[in-house]
Length: 145
Image 1 (spheres, rainbow, N blue to C red):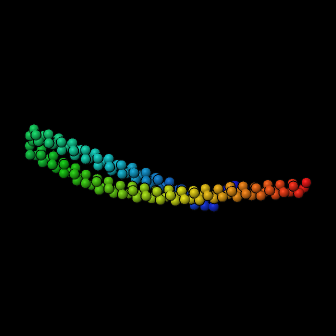
Image 2 (cartoon, rainbow, N blue to C red):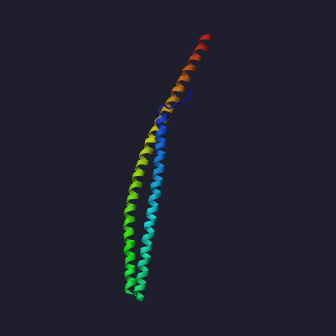
Image 3 (tube, rainbow, N blue to C red):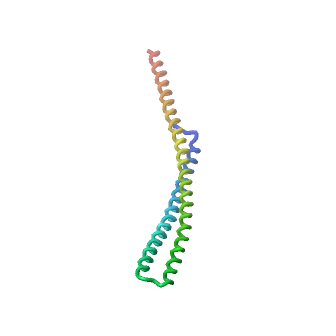
């Protein structure tokens, strides 16, 4: 007779949910990294543009060039602000997915622990049953003598 866990289907479903949660979390991490990388690139570009503008100011620039630089920097700042908002939103989603994944992992571990306990109980019961059988056989052999 082999061990059968009565909640095997529930464990299977919980494990599937955990796998889905892992995939969702991985996707949210990827989205966060993509947005954060874009933000970093824009910040770097703005910094380089500011440095180049200061260098050119030292050498002398026309007013139209200064205005063009300021408009470009203002546009970059607007884009940076949008990406900062998107980054915060992506971080929030990623943290929610992580909490959900943690919850599902704990849920699966509970069922696995229940399965382990039931399996240990099954083994204990089997050993006890086998011992009773051996005791009975032993008593019968003794009686036959």
